[in-house]
Image 1 (cartoon, rainbow, N blue to C red):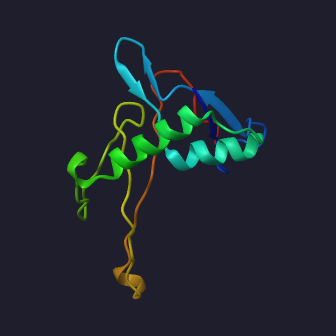
Image 2: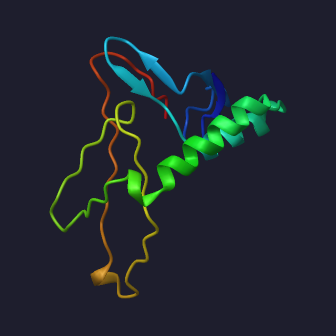
Length: 122
């Protein structure tokens, strides 16, 4: 289990961090991994992870960053991409937008909840 940064878009009364496992089982394998969120979580708590935890985060981050272990998908105009953050580890590559306003992308991000569960308090 690791401390994780809740990030700045949480509700004003939400905790700054949470303490969660990277992998969990609820009938399906679930994952919650972002090395930057873990590092910032420990910075916010003023704690330091055990050396084994630091090594595990580094190894997982290296594994996920290796092009041999990833699938690149291109989001084209008019397409929708739906990802479950707890089932698939995903990331975004850097994007440089056009200078002309009429050529700039229009990207909408939407968080959907399962049933009445309210995990995101933004």
